[in-house]
Image 1 (cartoon, rainbow, N blue to C red):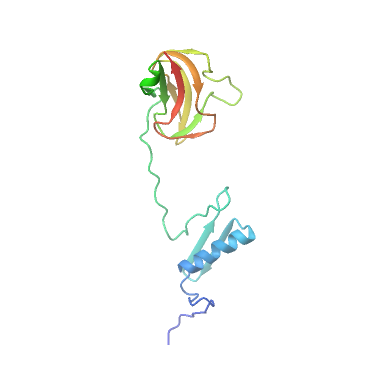
Image 2 (cartoon, rainbow, N blue to C red):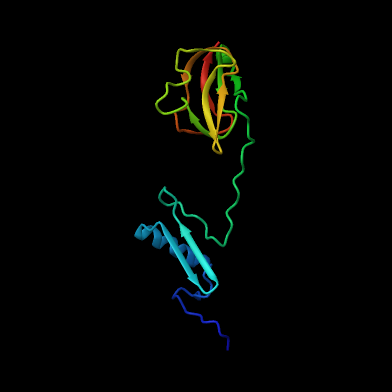
Length: 171
């Protein structure tokens, strides 16, 4: 005779095991069904908390299970040059300025400000072409090549990956 109280949930599990996968799935289903943003359940020493982010259908893991730490891109200091790569042999006069890091692309220093560069502008190796925000640090990205901007391949607010093309520059 144990002092632990077990209650059947009707699906073959006991209520004492709050971290049962079937229960967690059912809680997620209930959250979706009733458009809930958070569920926080406690029973004695046990606790489970599910929270939906801003976007629908994205559920945070229970607090008892640590989430994997995101892999951070190496931090580059402001002024670290973007990687400029030539296009394949069919267009040797064009260079691609690629993102040197993972982050959020901005074409100007603020929403009201003019863009650093626009299509048709001449740039030099030290010309700032954009800002990439990574971990609350705003990194100015220089062109690292000379020529005329012929295409902008990202929009302000876009998430960019390491090596993602940002600009086409005609030599």
